[in-house]
Length: 193
Image (cartoon, rainbow, N blue to C red; front, top):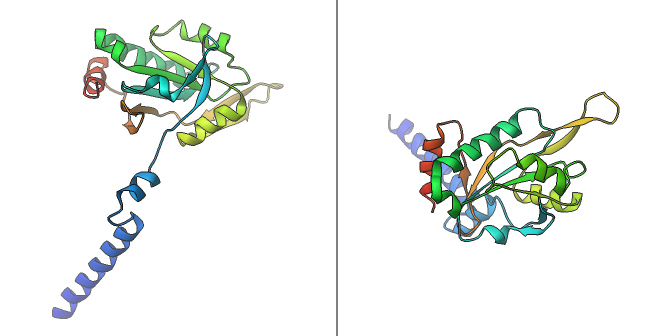
C-alpha cells in the first residue's frame, strides 16, 4: 500500500512540475504572452478614414471578423451585436463594436458602409489592403481562407466566427457569448464599463 501511495505522489509531483514549467512557473509574463490575443492594427473604416486599435482605448469593445458576402453567420452575428447595443440603451455609447473584413478584395469601404446600414449605427467596420488584414488576423489568431464555389471566379470565405471581448486597455478578455437574450448580453457588457 505504501508503494502505491508513493508512486501516486511521485506521479502527481512530476505532473505538477511539468505544468509549472510549461506555464512559465512564477513568471506571469510568460503566461500572458503565450495567450495574447489582439494587438495593434491600422486599417480604414467604412468612411475610408484611418482606424486603429487606439480608437477603442478607454472603453470595452467587441470585434468580429467576417465578410459582407457571408450568407448567414456574419449577418446573424452583427444583428445579435446590434440587438445587444440596443438593449444597453445609452450605455452603448460607452462601448464599441468593430466588424473587420477577412475579404478586403471585395469589401471596400463603400461596400462595408452599405452593409452596415442594416445594423446598429454605432457599429463600425474596417478594411484595408491584404497585408494589413493579414496582420490583424494574425494578431487576433483568426483563421480565414478563400473557398472557390466552382462558379467562375466566385468564392466564399471560411473563417473564425468568434466575437472577441476586449477591455478598456485593449486586452482580450474572453470570447463574447451572443447565444442568449440581448438583455443578458447587455448586462454582461455593462460589467466592463
